[in-house]
Image 1 (cartoon, rainbow, N blue to C red):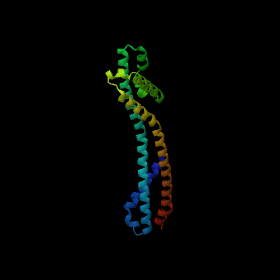
Image 2: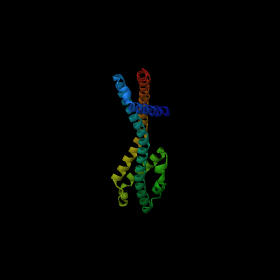
Image 3: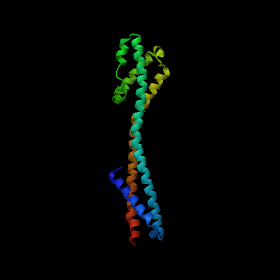
Image 4: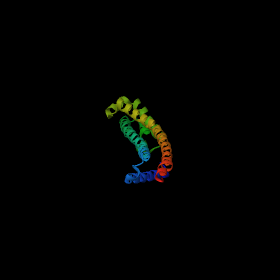
Length: 193
């Protein structure tokens, strides 16, 4: 929400407060009562849209981060088993390929993280029978694949949320325009009579 829109909502709340405090002055006009009810409905709608917009913004980032953290933990578990397996079988080629800092899953770029996870999946599938002694089986690899796919799907989720926020912003703008007309051309006119 833009600063000007936030200021408008604050002003509308003040107007609503004045209307509530001086009901005796305008209750005698049935037309004013209907306009006041319409004004209150639009104000409630604006406040609700503002809250929705804030929630969308907050949730988009945290969901993406949570997915990446779950993926990093699972990838680290499978990677650790692969490293232990490579050391015990003296497979230096495998060891060189899968031995890297696990923090790169969390803090690397999306492409780098995905490439490392894909490598871990590939090597885990190739050495699945030997990894059973290290606590990794087909369900663990499948879980890692699912977590990777969640992260990949999550890349588009923030875009979808941005589209939702834009739609709400557009609706807020239109509602504010309607409330301005309601205030200036209807309520203010009745007060001045």
